[in-house]
Image (cartoon, rainbow, N blue to C red; front, side):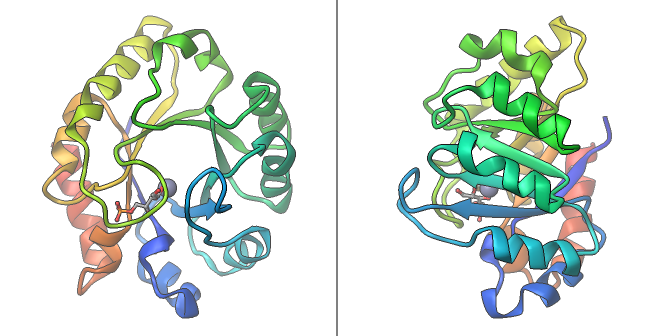
Amino acid sequence: MAVQISPSILSADFARLAEAAASVERADWLHVDVMDNHFVPNLTLGLPVVESLLKASPVPIDCHLMIENPDRWAPAYAEAGAQSVTFHVEAAHAPVRLARELRHQGARAGMALKPATPIDPYEDLLGELDMLLVMTVEPGFGGQKFLDLCLPKIRRTRELVAKHGLEIWIQVDGGVSASTIERCAEAGADVFVAGSAVFAADDPGAMVDELRRLASV
Ligand code: DX5
Ligand code: ZN
Protein backbone atom coordinates (compact mmCIF):
# COMPACT_ATOMS: atom_id res chain seq x y z
CA MET A 1 0.00 0.00 0.00
CA ALA A 2 1.24 3.46 -0.86
CA VAL A 3 2.27 5.73 1.98
CA GLN A 4 -0.45 8.13 3.12
CA ILE A 5 0.05 11.30 5.15
CA SER A 6 -2.67 12.66 7.43
CA PRO A 7 -1.72 16.01 9.03
CA SER A 8 -3.42 16.60 12.38
CA ILE A 9 -5.28 19.89 12.51
CA LEU A 10 -4.89 19.85 16.32
CA SER A 11 -1.55 21.63 15.95
CA ALA A 12 -2.93 24.33 13.63
CA ASP A 13 -4.28 27.75 14.58
CA PHE A 14 -7.93 27.06 15.44
CA ALA A 15 -8.88 30.55 14.27
CA ARG A 16 -7.55 29.71 10.79
CA LEU A 17 -8.60 26.13 10.17
CA ALA A 18 -9.51 26.63 6.52
CA GLU A 19 -6.10 28.13 5.76
CA ALA A 20 -4.42 25.27 7.62
CA ALA A 21 -6.40 22.71 5.61
CA ALA A 22 -5.46 24.46 2.36
CA SER A 23 -1.77 24.47 3.31
CA VAL A 24 -1.66 20.67 3.32
CA GLU A 25 -3.60 20.03 0.12
CA ARG A 26 -0.93 17.55 -1.05
CA ALA A 27 -1.69 15.32 1.95
CA ASP A 28 -3.98 12.31 1.58
CA TRP A 29 -6.21 13.11 4.53
CA LEU A 30 -6.85 15.80 7.13
CA HIS A 31 -6.75 14.24 10.62
CA VAL A 32 -9.28 15.81 13.00
CA ASP A 33 -8.96 15.00 16.71
CA VAL A 34 -12.25 15.06 18.59
CA MET A 35 -11.73 15.01 22.39
CA ASP A 36 -14.46 15.13 25.02
CA ASN A 37 -12.56 15.87 28.25
CA HIS A 38 -13.67 12.46 29.59
CA PHE A 39 -11.93 9.79 27.55
CA VAL A 40 -8.91 12.10 27.47
CA PRO A 41 -8.12 15.12 29.67
CA ASN A 42 -8.57 17.66 26.89
CA LEU A 43 -11.41 19.24 24.95
CA THR A 44 -11.06 20.13 21.29
CA LEU A 45 -13.87 20.30 18.78
CA GLY A 46 -16.95 18.40 17.72
CA LEU A 47 -19.43 17.80 14.97
CA PRO A 48 -20.15 21.42 13.90
CA VAL A 49 -16.45 22.07 13.27
CA VAL A 50 -16.07 18.77 11.42
CA GLU A 51 -19.05 19.74 9.24
CA SER A 52 -17.36 23.03 8.39
CA LEU A 53 -14.03 21.33 7.70
CA LEU A 54 -15.75 18.88 5.37
CA LYS A 55 -16.67 21.89 3.23
CA ALA A 56 -13.31 23.65 3.58
CA SER A 57 -10.82 20.80 3.27
CA PRO A 58 -9.34 19.92 -0.13
CA VAL A 59 -8.72 16.36 1.11
CA PRO A 60 -10.97 13.81 2.88
CA ILE A 61 -11.46 13.98 6.64
CA ASP A 62 -9.94 11.37 8.94
CA CYS A 63 -11.84 11.73 12.23
CA HIS A 64 -10.11 10.41 15.35
CA LEU A 65 -12.68 10.24 18.13
CA MET A 66 -11.12 10.30 21.60
CA ILE A 67 -14.50 10.21 23.31
CA GLU A 68 -16.53 8.06 25.67
CA ASN A 69 -19.44 6.12 24.23
CA PRO A 70 -18.46 6.29 20.54
CA ASP A 71 -21.33 3.83 19.92
CA ARG A 72 -23.64 6.77 20.57
CA TRP A 73 -21.70 9.58 18.86
CA ALA A 74 -19.50 8.20 16.07
CA PRO A 75 -22.26 7.52 13.51
CA ALA A 76 -23.09 11.25 13.40
CA TYR A 77 -19.61 11.92 11.99
CA ALA A 78 -20.12 9.36 9.25
CA GLU A 79 -23.58 10.78 8.61
CA ALA A 80 -22.03 14.25 8.24
CA GLY A 81 -19.78 12.84 5.51
CA ALA A 82 -16.48 12.13 7.25
CA GLN A 83 -14.73 9.68 4.94
CA SER A 84 -12.95 7.86 7.79
CA VAL A 85 -14.14 7.55 11.40
CA THR A 86 -11.91 6.01 14.07
CA PHE A 87 -13.12 5.13 17.56
CA HIS A 88 -11.14 3.84 20.55
CA VAL A 89 -11.68 0.20 21.41
CA GLU A 90 -11.21 1.05 25.10
CA ALA A 91 -14.33 3.24 24.94
CA ALA A 92 -16.54 1.23 22.60
CA HIS A 93 -19.27 -0.97 24.07
CA ALA A 94 -19.87 -2.97 20.88
CA PRO A 95 -16.97 -2.37 18.47
CA VAL A 96 -18.18 -4.89 15.88
CA ARG A 97 -21.64 -3.37 15.70
CA LEU A 98 -20.16 0.14 15.56
CA ALA A 99 -17.66 -0.72 12.80
CA ARG A 100 -20.45 -2.31 10.76
CA GLU A 101 -22.65 0.71 11.24
CA LEU A 102 -19.92 3.12 10.11
CA ARG A 103 -19.23 1.05 7.01
CA HIS A 104 -22.92 0.78 6.27
CA GLN A 105 -23.02 4.58 6.37
CA GLY A 106 -20.28 4.71 3.75
CA ALA A 107 -17.33 5.68 5.95
CA ARG A 108 -14.12 3.78 6.43
CA ALA A 109 -14.17 2.26 9.92
CA GLY A 110 -11.09 2.68 12.09
CA MET A 111 -10.32 1.32 15.53
CA ALA A 112 -7.65 2.87 17.78
CA LEU A 113 -5.50 1.34 20.51
CA LYS A 114 -3.87 3.34 23.32
CA PRO A 115 -0.22 2.45 24.03
CA ALA A 116 -1.12 -0.02 26.81
CA THR A 117 -3.81 -1.81 24.76
CA PRO A 118 -2.54 -4.94 22.98
CA ILE A 119 -3.66 -5.94 19.49
CA ASP A 120 -3.85 -9.70 20.00
CA PRO A 121 -7.23 -9.79 21.81
CA TYR A 122 -8.72 -8.04 18.77
CA GLU A 123 -7.32 -10.31 16.07
CA ASP A 124 -10.76 -11.66 15.23
CA LEU A 125 -12.15 -8.13 14.78
CA LEU A 126 -9.66 -7.09 12.12
CA GLY A 127 -11.87 -8.24 9.28
CA GLU A 128 -14.51 -5.75 10.39
CA LEU A 129 -12.16 -2.78 10.01
CA ASP A 130 -10.66 -0.62 7.30
CA MET A 131 -7.95 0.82 9.52
CA LEU A 132 -6.22 0.02 12.79
CA LEU A 133 -4.71 3.03 14.58
CA VAL A 134 -1.73 2.30 16.81
CA MET A 135 -1.27 5.30 19.10
CA THR A 136 2.39 6.16 19.65
CA VAL A 137 1.70 8.59 22.52
CA GLU A 138 -0.96 8.58 25.22
CA PRO A 139 -3.88 10.30 23.46
CA GLY A 140 -4.91 13.77 24.52
CA PHE A 141 -2.33 16.26 23.35
CA GLY A 142 -0.17 17.16 20.39
CA GLY A 143 3.56 17.67 20.65
CA GLN A 144 4.37 14.67 22.86
CA LYS A 145 7.41 12.47 22.51
CA PHE A 146 7.13 9.38 20.32
CA LEU A 147 6.94 6.13 22.33
CA ASP A 148 9.28 3.53 20.86
CA LEU A 149 7.62 0.91 23.05
CA CYS A 150 4.72 0.93 20.57
CA LEU A 151 6.84 -0.27 17.64
CA PRO A 152 6.45 -4.01 18.40
CA LYS A 153 2.66 -3.57 18.30
CA ILE A 154 2.88 -2.04 14.83
CA ARG A 155 4.94 -5.06 13.74
CA ARG A 156 2.51 -7.48 15.36
CA THR A 157 -0.46 -5.77 13.71
CA ARG A 158 1.26 -6.01 10.32
CA GLU A 159 1.83 -9.74 10.94
CA LEU A 160 -1.81 -10.34 11.84
CA VAL A 161 -3.05 -8.36 8.85
CA ALA A 162 -0.82 -10.44 6.55
CA LYS A 163 -1.78 -13.70 8.28
CA HIS A 164 -5.45 -13.09 7.52
CA GLY A 165 -4.80 -11.71 4.03
CA LEU A 166 -6.53 -8.44 4.89
CA GLU A 167 -6.05 -5.01 3.34
CA ILE A 168 -6.43 -2.98 6.49
CA TRP A 169 -4.44 0.21 6.73
CA ILE A 170 -2.20 0.61 9.77
CA GLN A 171 -2.11 4.18 11.03
CA VAL A 172 0.32 5.66 13.55
CA ASP A 173 -0.42 8.82 15.53
CA GLY A 174 1.65 10.69 18.10
CA GLY A 175 5.15 12.10 17.93
CA VAL A 176 5.49 11.21 14.25
CA SER A 177 8.10 13.48 12.66
CA ALA A 178 10.99 13.44 10.22
CA SER A 179 13.08 11.76 12.91
CA THR A 180 10.59 8.98 13.84
CA ILE A 181 8.57 8.24 10.70
CA GLU A 182 11.09 5.82 9.21
CA ARG A 183 10.89 3.60 12.30
CA CYS A 184 7.11 3.48 11.94
CA ALA A 185 7.27 2.67 8.23
CA GLU A 186 9.85 -0.04 8.80
CA ALA A 187 7.59 -1.60 11.47
CA GLY A 188 4.71 -1.78 8.97
CA ALA A 189 2.65 1.41 9.27
CA ASP A 190 1.27 2.92 6.08
CA VAL A 191 -0.84 5.90 7.21
CA PHE A 192 1.06 8.56 9.14
CA VAL A 193 -0.54 11.24 11.29
CA ALA A 194 1.65 14.23 12.10
CA GLY A 195 0.49 17.33 13.94
CA SER A 196 3.24 19.48 15.36
CA ALA A 197 5.79 18.24 12.81
CA VAL A 198 3.63 19.60 9.98
CA PHE A 199 1.96 22.68 11.42
CA ALA A 200 4.98 23.99 13.33
CA ALA A 201 7.03 23.75 10.13
CA ASP A 202 7.72 26.93 8.15
CA ASP A 203 6.18 25.26 5.11
CA PRO A 204 3.58 22.63 6.11
CA GLY A 205 3.11 21.52 2.50
CA ALA A 206 6.82 20.87 2.07
CA MET A 207 6.87 18.91 5.34
CA VAL A 208 4.07 16.68 4.03
CA ASP A 209 6.24 15.93 0.98
CA GLU A 210 9.27 15.30 3.17
CA LEU A 211 7.42 12.91 5.48
CA ARG A 212 6.06 11.02 2.48
CA ARG A 213 9.55 10.72 1.03
CA LEU A 214 11.03 9.46 4.32
CA ALA A 215 8.24 6.91 4.85
CA SER A 216 8.48 5.61 1.29
CA VAL A 217 12.03 4.29 1.46
C1 DX5 B 1 -3.06 13.11 20.15
C2 DX5 B 1 -3.75 13.19 18.81
C3 DX5 B 1 -2.81 13.40 17.70
C4 DX5 B 1 -2.00 14.67 17.80
C5 DX5 B 1 -0.65 14.31 17.25
O1 DX5 B 1 -3.86 12.50 21.07
O2 DX5 B 1 -4.47 11.99 18.54
O3 DX5 B 1 -3.45 13.30 16.43
O4 DX5 B 1 -2.52 15.74 17.08
O5 DX5 B 1 0.18 15.40 17.42
P1 DX5 B 1 1.76 15.26 17.25
O6 DX5 B 1 2.01 14.79 15.85
O7 DX5 B 1 2.25 16.64 17.52
O8 DX5 B 1 2.22 14.25 18.27
ZN1 ZN C 1 -5.20 11.79 16.47
